[in-house]
Length: 118
Image 1 (tube, helix red, strand yellow):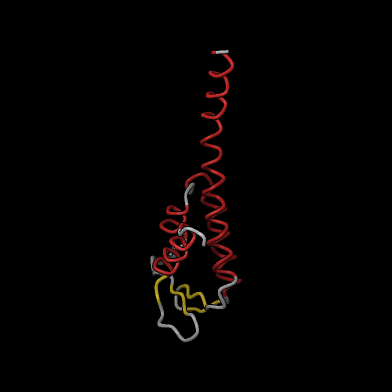
Image 2 (cartoon, one colour; image 1 turned 90 degrees about the vertical axis):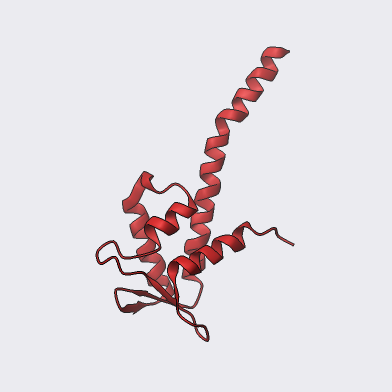
């Protein structure tokens, strides 16, 4: 009986990192979907792009980053904040709202994801 319990505990413990990784990937995917469906403009290096183009650009950067981005917070910090070429911050321009940095915008979306559902 002890062996069965020990095996079950080990099985659960070994899947925890995988579950955490899937949860983080889900958060990153949700952030990308939020950009894509936002209806906002995504400004990069002084040029405005559609929400779909902004999300596509972020997906490309994420793919290039590979294993260096494993959490939603890392995604925001390393992918979604600024141009890797110029260092200029990305801006999100939503109708009827003041412009904000993509970092602020993404962090708000991430906070929304973490909020308990009613």
